[in-house]
Image (cartoon, rainbow, N blue to C red; front, side, top):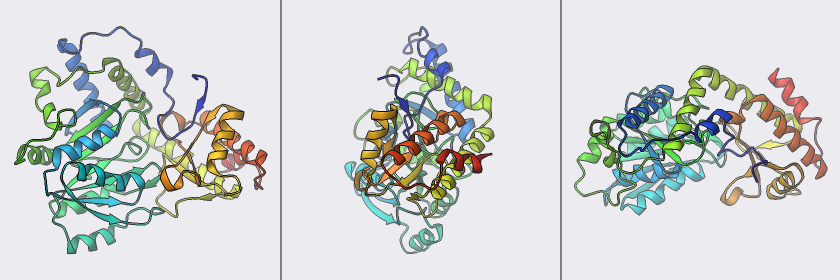
Length: 380
């Protein structure tokens, strides 16, 4: 099981120094104040990477925990919430809004394009009575990227709080939380950060904190209640026992990013993503998106004569390589290359493109040359 080569769009490969630090002896996170300081410094590292001075919390639970916690903490019965929908995860926010008694309104767009900010502005001119709005930075099932640096300031013009799922975007895509006026930023450890799955990272603005404090009704539940983190540092006490080894791994992964340099990391993602897309098109395959391409995920349409599920099964059986299709209606039509985090390195991308090239040809796809040669043409 452990020798499979993973090239899915998260969880990604983790560097050896991240894996090793999780094996180190740990202290008791409930009573050791030194760990509180370590936790706080890890949060600050993350804040520096994504451009925010807002409070950061690391929650024990995979990225979905953050999405639900944001909706649970902000939503009261009858609240109108704008769900910006141009992808499966974008639309999915409506379920959390509904779960906690809110009334969602969809602003829907084609799934093959990023959100048109001018169209959103026209919509808001007619209807802007929303407590908060949700938007996905990079919608992983298709890799579509939304420009939160324009979307969120527009929403704030109307006094609408902004909730951004950047689980699959952050670190691979440029992100400045404070400049973009993002009230709640949501991330996960397992994507471009390249730490093991199991942690949600939440950044929360003072506006969002005030909204939560001024609720007329109590938040339903405890684990998804962001207010339980208020003042943890001053009290030197966590709401529940922290998964200390996971947080040590996250801290090391953040150090890896800072040591390489955030700009270099972003450039590495951009160069590999651009080269992959150009090579795939020249090879004879079609990209799912018309525009709005993310630097962390490329979605490729697989011919019906082969099928995405058959192709991924073939790659696993013959080349011991894990590659993901998409979700729901795209399960058998899209293959996703997750060039994010540790997977956005030359040795990793060369492997997956070679495997994809061989597999498609062995399944009788009529290709235009060698996929890796085409990649090299654009990369070098």
